[in-house]
Length: 131
Image (cartoon, rainbow, N blue to C red; front, side, top):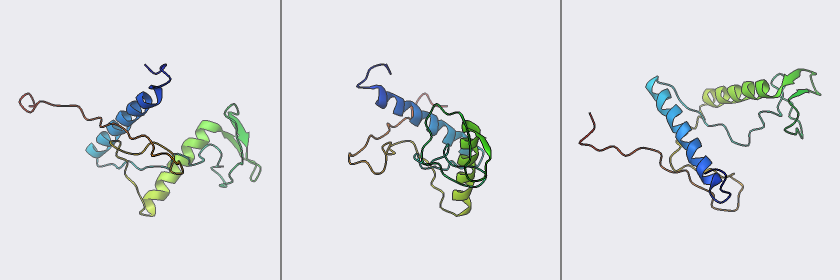
């Protein structure tokens, strides 16, 4: 279904929304909190050691050296550290934004279009059949 050019984005958005909804549910069971990181946060291009942000970093570059502090970074490990640190920063500053997948906007904030909305991912349950 994702190969259909007209529907692929909507189908992918629904899948991502269900995934986020499931993680949020599991975190709530353990008294955790899901924190939203801006989707355009430059996690791969930011040095996790000194905070320097590269102007450009193409997707084919998997490892890079910071021009400021000369630290060597694996792109994915560096991004994971930056996302973790950004989540901790948001929580400690009290500006946490819990993510709710149902009905959330999935387009960039600067977009001139109205954006796509995620679909309600909660399954229907028959009250008679529920235990």
